Amino acid sequence: MTSAPARPRLSPPASLAPSEELLVALDIDGTIVQIDGYLHPVVAKGITAMRRRGAAVVLATGRGVDGVLPIARQLGMSDGYAVCANGAVVLQFDDSPAGYHLSDVVTFDPASALDQLRERIPSALFLVEDGNGDHYTTGPFPDGELATAPPIVPFERLRHMAATRVTVRAPDVPSAEFAELIADTGLHGVGYYIGWSAWLDIAPQGVSKASALEMLRGRLQIAPHATVAVGDGSNDVEMLAWAHYSVAMGQAPPQVQAQANEVTAPVTEGGLAYVLSAILTR
Image (cartoon, rainbow, N blue to C red; front, side, top):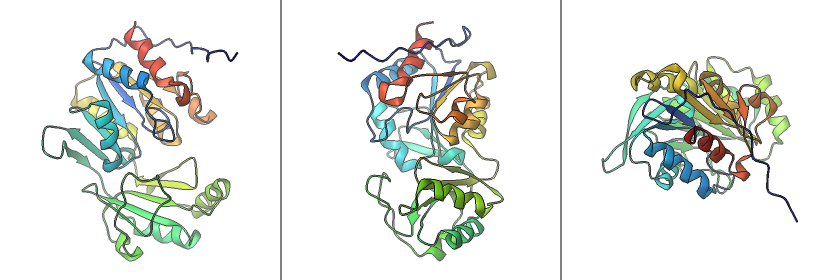
């Protein structure tokens, strides 16, 4: 008989009371949802409970706007904020027909990075998200990797867009080789994060989930010591270092876990629910 997974021992600071004076930043992929998009009911329940207690639960993700909205709907979020595109876009949920508006947008000129990367990885697919939250790509991505199918446009058109995010995907390149190619490219003037597969996200220089969250923290008048962050990827490192109390998911790489105060169970075991429960039951 298989024993149940061990419950992680988490000890959030006693000062983290679940109230409107608390900000809880949550990564989406690998934290809220599993790699196949599955949202464990106990995780959804924990997020709902935290919001009902008044906490400012902020979705913080590398996803674009169109990838965030389905998750927000699943969670019943009709108010609050989401940090998208690794901090370059902040949206606020509202009662408008769209259900949100973009409150803060940071763009950059992607031409140099695009040119460098196409020269280094000619077979790669390129995607740009503009300041309106719209996406354009040079070709179709593998099935299931994008929330919607963006228009396919010439590479030259992407070069002239004001971008909030550039994504580079090379399905035919092994992950380790892809990481080496990116390192050898020597990108300058931008921030970038390599994903689990041959996937690269590029953001404006100085922009991260942490920079957007710090802006929101000030806007919401929440004290620095009343901040929580949970994540699992390289694009969560700054966010985990920013939060007063940070937790890495159990499947996170060692370098990500090293930035967190504690480590919970993997996403496949509903690890986020343990974190939320530990705070809610203090």
